[in-house]
Length: 288
Image (cartoon, rainbow, N blue to C red):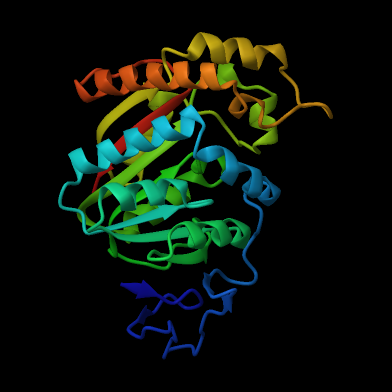
């Protein structure tokens, strides 16, 4: 069900025109803007990051491994899902992986920054994209599954975002989340990425349950590579002018291949039911 951004009335038209208050969203470059002009912009991200990110995602071990884990979790825990919305879809890398593996799922993507949607719509022309603020999701019981992958750590109002996701997901559906974890891993990379926080595992579970969800599974990942991550991060604890924000993604081919193989082993163990207590990131799966 669609909701008016202005007055929150139910909308029954394809063009999002509200018969109650006469509000109708605009479009930008063919993308529907489900966002009020007065909305607070720039929720913890630098849009100039998108072009280089789009180049790195296809080859970098971390993005590939995270995609494989997300797709596995979606297939296992929501096998009957017919629709999937990714909040903060960026360049559409995750959605393109889901669309390839699950071609029968209707794909939706939202992003606060129109710059990211330019890349996403080119990657996945068949998907439906819109500009949206995760703090104001104008849907009620609309999607079978909603995903947010390394997104909510950028937003001060993460609890509000989780509540909005709860309202937008269908009964029996759920959410998939990935977030960076462990406060002691905080470094210049987090500062550059405009992270508000790195989560504690219990902290995220509590917030998800407070929003109304039932947690099905939570596990850290990038666990076997944690010593390498520690070495990289503690080399520079503070952001400086010469900090390369993409340094962790720019790996020699041999090292990238080795790390990718390591992550495949990690995924196999997670599939067997092992939950890792520590790592660079965490996957959380919850149901409404």
